[in-house]
Amino acid sequence: MKHFELKGTTRQVGNKAVIKAFRREGLVPCNLYGLGMDNILFTVNAKELKALTDTPNAYIVDLFLDGAKKAQTCVLHELQWHPVTDACLHVDFLAVGDKKPVTISVPLVIEGHAKGVQQGGKFYQNVRSLKISALLKDLPDELTIDITSLGLDKRIKASDVRVKNVTVVSDKDTIICGVKTTRNVTAAAAEE
Image (cartoon, rainbow, N blue to C red; front, side, top):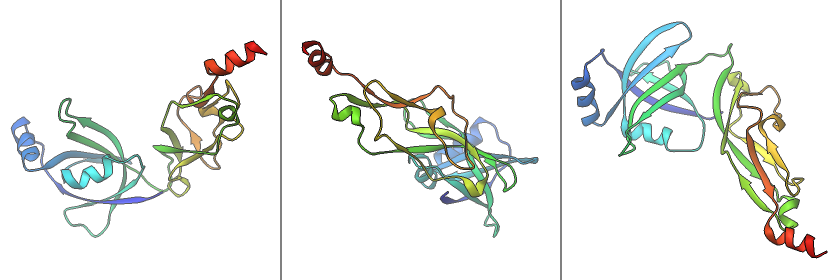
């Protein structure tokens, strides 16, 4: 999986006025926890964070706090957004290690041409990513879904996705994509 470098500065616990002052300076308050460590409060530059949050890709974050030489490996855990401006208000990062599985959302890539579409059906895609769990070394950048054999009124569910050393954590009944029968196909079948 791809890595993303992010630099942060540790901070102290503050009240609302302190947090608002950070945001005015173009900083986003963040929290790092997990792996039995104490919570670390820090801030990151909002513009640098935007490159991480405004993409469909999934990343392992290499977090360098206060100019440290050694990075803290983590993943995005939870984001809080402003309801009107869509600015990121707060980010929770989860520290990860090599020995425990990591749960992360990974984008889906659809490949092929469904035979149901060639028969006159309409292709639809319900989800753009799936939540998976795997060790750091086994995490894929994306999940590829081949739809070539997808016929009329057929669908692919999360339970149909099989990747070596990866467990799909999303609900097994989640419909990823499918092919619907259109009115034209139904009318043509009725005429026959």
